[in-house]
Length: 72
Image 1 (cartoon, one colour):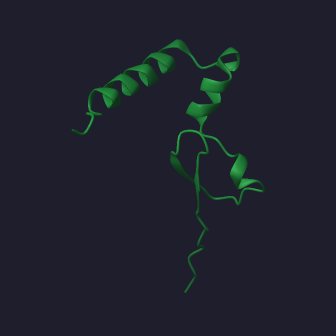
Image 2 (spheres, one colour):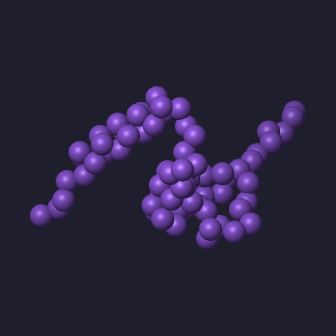
């Protein structure tokens, strides 16, 4: 029987947004990793995404912000 190839999954946390993401490659400098969202926040002039993608991301952020209620 053939053996199933297993890939190692590496989990990292964005240093700015604290967002957790997974990759299949080990990062040489894991402390310097940032998420795509954080990259575009830091570099708005390099945001080359299509307009419909920007609108979709903005709508998702507004939706998630509406569910973030402050605890009393």
